[in-house]
Length: 391
Image 1 (cartoon, one colour):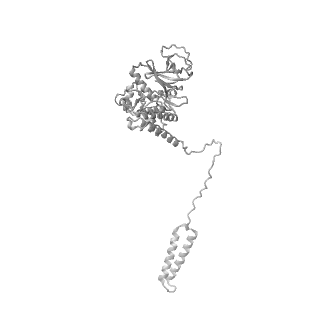
Image 2 (tube, one colour):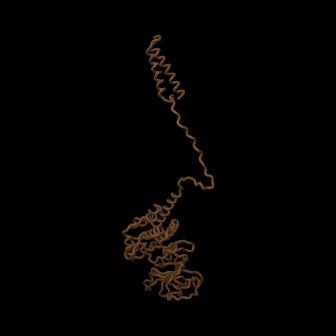
Image 3 (tube, one colour):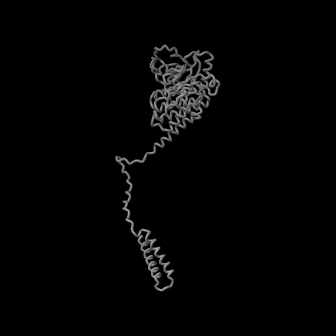
């Protein structure tokens, strides 16, 4: 693990004051007190990954510190030249979320890299293993990390070792991506044929496990990191590196909601797409992954923010508006006999029958047909008037 934090390793007996160039040491480290470029090595900050990180103090500007990275192994002239070529590439990488390379060089036969000092430690120290991270913090971290990775990918550089230990917190709390020690050039000859397998197996994409890393491999590692931050554990674990690597290549990650029931479905879908087995199934860029994750979180949050309709709390001190009581419904009126259309039809029928009877009776005086027709017509008129008047 390479880190540029101000946390002192427990097994080292060094002066804990970073600005004090007068120190008493019992360590056998021959580099302590040596000068690398414009910096004097004060104490180790961390070790791992083939290099040691020292806290360095500027010899001409007291209390000005930097992180000095020195390889553990001795380099031959060809390796030193390769180191300088890679360092010159990193020196030109300027991004607000990438640790700045301030200088590099060779002191005697020892190459060194001078990096900006991040005194607030790593994200692993801020969020120890097993600790869940709030979604809003995860979104902030991912946006910053993806921005740095997209910049590197645009420079055709693949990081290959995304993990909490390589994510520092700057002086203002910003996330800084560091340790491009095993980074490679994308689409180069070495990336296609001579690529050595490097990285941390917990976060290695299936193609990286077989030495075929690509920009989407960094996206996969960031997806593993988001998964771990959400539920407190990475999707794949095992007793050996080989066991974990085989799970990356063959096993489907456990669904997030089985470990974190409250996870947003849209967020889970985005994370699992970033963890697809083949690069083509993932998002087209790491920036697209970060944007999709943020949109999923915002969409789900907006849906869950709409409060359900509920009765007002009785304990509220403010008066609760009361809707006017609806008018009391009266019992349905008993249907009147005159409301029936039966009588109206009957009256019309009697009227029509009476008219027909009169027409058939002709002009005969007081004939039975004339009398009956007149009575029917009169009675029909009366029934029609009464039924329409009181209906």
